Length: 318
Image 1 (cartoon, rainbow, N blue to C red):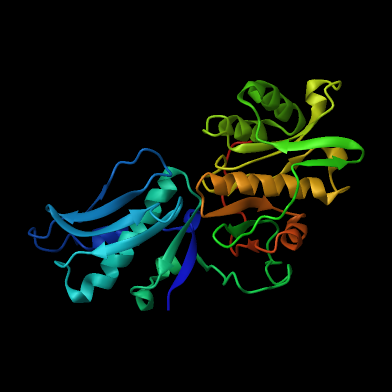
Image 2 (image 1 turned 120 degrees about the vertical axis):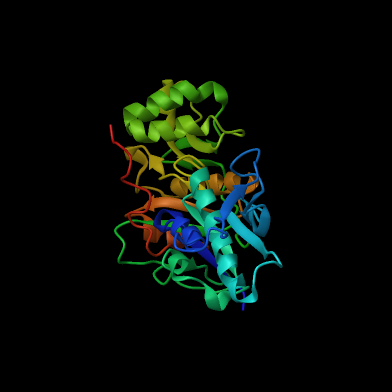
């Protein structure tokens, strides 16, 4: 039976010892090393593949981003590989492809476990989470992992149906607009974020402006009589902290906890933008106290076991 696994790339152990094991130092000099070769790609989201070679002989090939950004598969093992070694070669190809995605800037990768499923190796299994059946209807609590202080949340765009959440709404008497920022607003928004939330989030949204299209969403007060920075109320970005991930949601203090419609609209619009960019799934990064509320609001969200601390806490904080 075919299943899909989400791999926590930050928990993935190196593949080099497995490659070295195919060419042990004590073996005959006639046994050449197995060498990975990567097809160049136009960018980290572009389709590519990895091949394993030994002395010019192709041992196998595995696709990268073929089924969407942040995916691995399908893999083909060459006929020259002995039957007893084919399962190991298949999963080694997957392992090397996963490492490539990590190098490209992903924190997670999706792969199908069907062929040689009985040989799914422990080095991958320890970093894997089986993606649930999207037809299952479970409560927010059942989709959560209460043992985690904070966690990343998974959403499968292939089965997600956006709601009719408006991008224009009124909150506490203010006429608000949730939208992608304009390039001309970059310096204003980065300065506002640095002053309001700190350098970390300012760096993330700064990076979103290097994407084409811009990979962030902001909340703006339509009242043009207000000072420019007073019109900015929140932001959310994707493909910034890591590819395939949404950053933590940021809302100014006076809007927090009063009306969930604003946070819902911000998340929903960012998810729409991320899906439109070609992503087949997304991960909401580092969700803490608001996790259960997010799970209640979005029935397609699932807490990823083992995702705390994940990628967070590694950078130097200013």
